[in-house]
Length: 159
Image (cartoon, rainbow, N blue to C red; front, side, top):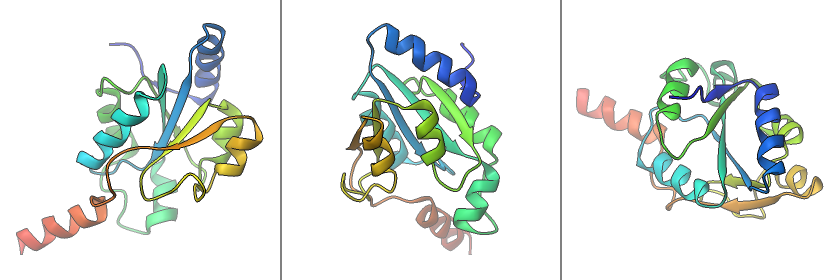
């Protein structure tokens, strides 16, 4: 199996080569803590929008900033290994910033894909993506799955 977990610098080189080949680069991002069916459907739909899917994965420190103490449940190494095992995922880049804007500016994917908890108009990184000429798209099934709810269900069944 090829090495799928790469640095931002390695991803830049891969994306440059992919563009030279005339292919479309798609980026999805998230925490992917306790993978569930909503994550799978989101990534499958994102991959169908282009030729190469880069997943920007929030680091452990970034998730703690976003979600608070006690998260992530799984560390970034384990989360990245699980993502790397998925056939629809071509590359994974772990990022530390609280949001993906800086990585988008650096990698400049053709399409930035977010889940259905957003609309194309409400994607937080929309202006960054449109600013470099990219497109914003929404993918996946309705947002009725979440890691937070999955954790609550596990706790409720354990008590």
